[in-house]
Image (tube, rainbow, N blue to C red; front, top):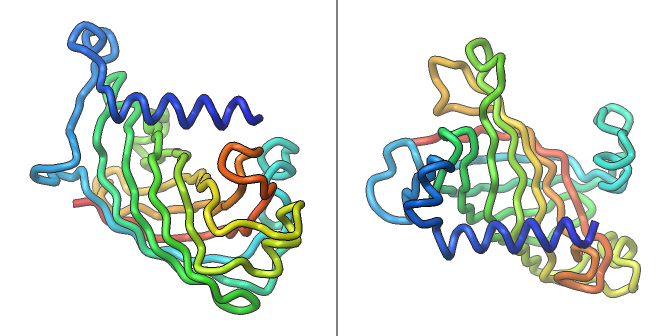
Length: 216
């Protein structure tokens, strides 16, 4: 799993920093949009919120416990906002790479604030998209918390935790085919040490969230 984290982070950063040459683009159908210029449906803002999930992420995504109705939840909630931009696409726009900046606030049993910067890889070519437009995405990035809660210390495995952790946020989106710019987003908002790549803290807090994203 550590190698997966490392490969994802390295490959995504390499693509962002060093776009493929024209020859590579011939078979990748690579489109580089960049970070500046008119948005033209490449920019987005999102508001979202959700509930703290106590069930370990490994049990959910690697152990097959995918139904949120069977997860254990804590007493903390989370609200956040983010701004993102599509900077590249490839394979006839089946895949897209997006940058995101976000800020959020925990409430309930935890009260820390969070800020993050991340890169998302998104896939959108599903056979049912003429009926319900669907995308899936996952991120690699950094998340900084204003403090370390007792919950994070308990999940860290080192009794300390860390303010700066890896940000992994798999999500699925749904939209009407005639109005793709308005998306219902279900995101698993997760902080961790990425198996030692970012921190020696094993785990952090995580939230199952639902939000609305507007693209413009």
